[in-house]
Amino acid sequence: MIVLNNRKDGNEKISKYFKGSEFICHCGQCPISIVSDDLLFRLDMLRNIFGEPLRISSGYRCWVHNASKEVGGKDQSRHLSGHGADILFPAKNKDLLIKLCGKMFEYSYCGPNFIHVNV
Image (cartoon, rainbow, N blue to C red):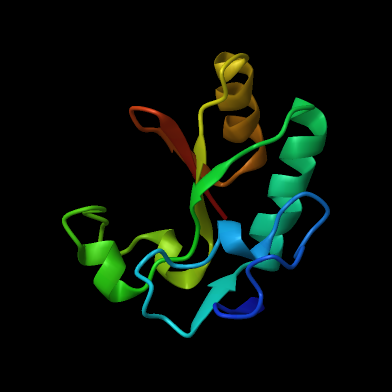
């Protein structure tokens, strides 16, 4: 598990392709956020196979942010434990991304403009 200091680690690379800022809770109040090593490993593999940059729209969420009207997250959301992330759909190759996520992650589902993945 990677623990991010939300005030210091935002611009730090935490894997081959991703920065800490992509996984920090969006509430603006949390001092730390967490990210699963396995999630990062699989996201790096996905990015490498997909061949294009991936944009994480939501990584870790604290309980308050997850329950907010903005998110409306579930009580058992994997975002709460650092094991889930939402990837914004790219301009092209959306179907390929969906297919890869279905094979590379334990669970995935499509939202209106994103795909959620978790380990």
